[in-house]
Length: 164
Image (tube, rainbow, N blue to C red; front, side):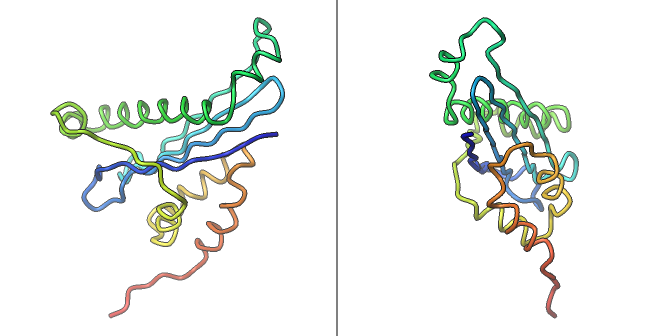
């Protein structure tokens, strides 16, 4: 069974006090079927986390061989990233049309950059999205995030306090 994940960070904050948007895209494939998931940490108070999953299969009209040749982890992640971008943009449009216009319509370019695990680790260390990270780990159906799960669980137990 093949699986993988990639993390993308948005170029602009949606909330001045929030983190930069972070998209975690997950893909898993086995013979004749696959699924993808995305988890978006928006940096907003509501919605703080957006989640979506998509399943793929031969549907009886594509041979298993054709499916296995054409569907791979990279194109699954690419397709789910596009879905995640649309999901974030639509959610922002529903929440705040003015901010949506400023970020996406007024000639400004909202970009996404592929990053390593560090922004997610930093988010876990900040405790800002503790419940959302727990929700992501509980909802994922993929084994792809297992290497990160232990690290994120340990970070969630570390005490963070301001020093005066």
